[in-house]
Image (tube, rainbow, N blue to C red; front, side, top):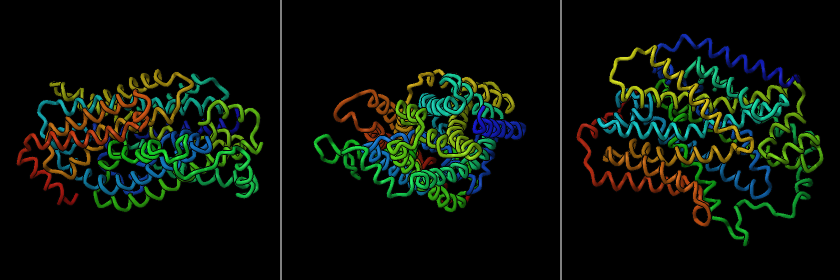
Length: 501
């Protein structure tokens, strides 16, 4: 086993130890899923952003930017859309959601918040929300396992399947044991770790190649294609489809349950503003450096600096460019720590997704339809069992070694953004919104996203989140205007606006 692999093993052991440490702290569902609503600004900001970016940040986005030049253009606009979406999510959603979820029956999951907010006695809204969470998170979690499989297969010189099971065991182990407190503590550590790693790699590449001038000269000889800040059509015009699709990623933030859970868990709404500043510094830096790493990686490969083995690996799979660069550029200890940064990116999202999926199954399906009184200890056990079952299904979805982290994340991201994003925004800003408006918005957004994703050609090449988000908004407005909202719901909405919690 290489020194890099040994360093990564120690990191994995530390993750599992953290899970054991937090095992006995989880006495009820609020502890296991929201950590008792006790996050400070640093922990909420770093946990939210680390759980947001995932292995996609170090594999998917650099792999897209590596594919000069249209790939780089798409990566830049995707990163820009995500940065704007992050800011608007913290600005428009975070503070209001923190207050509304506590006012609306102290809800600890999004489906319960929707049910309480709209006084749904049918359990229909809660159930359909939980089903969409389960479906999209199975795909999203499988994307993280694909990234983990690529990492461990590269580092341990193992086959893809072996890497998949090693990654799954590590991530599931500490999520199963530790719950939300362990996940947020680890995400905070991993968020800082990722930030430093994303700064170190491009600096090292530039130093190795002799500076920006050498990089520019190398890139100029790679292809006759000219870089453009705007995506182009084959005829040379600006591609509105690619532009709208890349920029549309920002819409997704309003509906991501694993990110919104961090807003719900903040100690006080007063902590939101400092957390927003921390989050934006982190996001802008890491997104920019991820794109830069992909571009510099292309120059590094084209300049003949990369080993034959790494070159062959990257030629087959662009998403391994970060791994190849670390193995070529870094010494054994630093390289091992940077490989651990990849695991940090993967696990910080996968653990959050598993936890939110478990909360939906336990809180929104199992408890919603189980009339018997069940102890908190038993419910935590059900949640831990759900983590195991969901992980096994996600592993089955990830078994294909040709799976793309970027494409899997895009499907799940679009589905969540369209199904829940409009409903979250309208529920926080429009007191005239009704139960049936919420149901119509969630159902139409989720279904249109899935259907649109599977249609090809022409207008269907637009990223599905854009049309699905628009249709969901229209459904909420039209159906709400045709149905009635009670005075009680409107009064609760007004209380949430002025609450100081």
